[in-house]
Length: 49
Image (cartoon, rainbow, N blue to C red; front, side):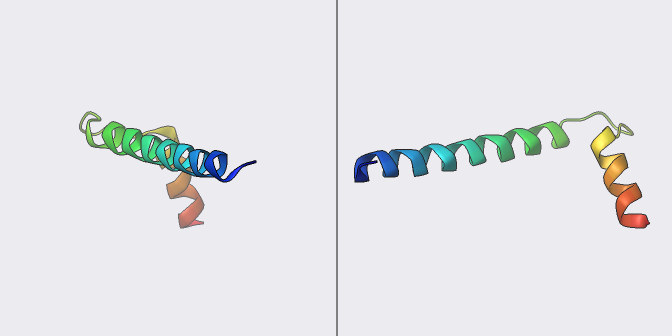
């Protein structure tokens, strides 16, 4: 890979990480009151045990 391709790959990975984190943040802030995702339930059971 050339230097230009490496820079493009790094920026692509960085933008994908930002996209995923922003979508997770948006989903969790806009969820209905009293609703809990399955992943949150699993995380609570794992951390409590």
